[in-house]
Image (cartoon, rainbow, N blue to C red; front, side, top):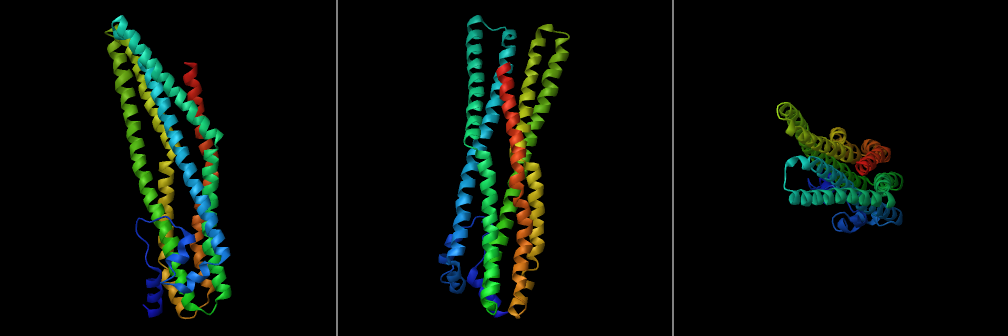
Length: 335
């Protein structure tokens, strides 16, 4: 490898395998000693403004995402909890308990059911009134648009204003690889793994629900043919339905299966593009056309841009999920 390329790589440094966050407003300071040539350019107001907008949208998206997921999952669990309490309340009269115990258990289960339904209504109202879903999706899309724009604008500037400065262009290419290409590969690899892990948990919950439905209401129904006093306990089968609904809502909120597949596909695309990174470095080092830099940036940004547009389309899908949660609450109140 050419010494000039080695120097550029060493000046920019390498990305950590578990790092998928960037703070571009700090790039000038981070690179001031090792790569002062590009650090000075990064201090220009146009790049600092784009970086600031990215960080602002990114922070807002993270905040809205955290609150939305927290409240939505609490609502889902609260609905399930209320349904479980309602199922136990339905079979309580057949449990042959002493009158005093029956009243106390009825009171406690009734309070649990009321608390679950109340918490679900409260959290869903917060999601709707604060527009957490719309804020999360819109801010995330805006943040990623600014991130793409930051690197694209920088590449265009270097090609136009520093067409003859090959070393500066090499520095940018190494910077782009570290802070965009590798960071995004890390993000989609890590998040894809997290979605696969979450999907296995959801599948386990669904399996438990199916087993409860099969063994619970089914077996109790069969035994009830010989012991009619057991028939009222068949209502416990609705617990399986509540757990199954929990698994369905969990998957709709997390979208684990779809996201795991999408993220894995994006990682593969970025990996194939990364194969050509050294070729681009060689072209620039040998005095080839600098326009290859913007072509390289576009090659990386295009699949990322396609992926980021999913944030906007996800609004309607997630809105449908929230409508289902609202309906579940309404159904509880009718019971």
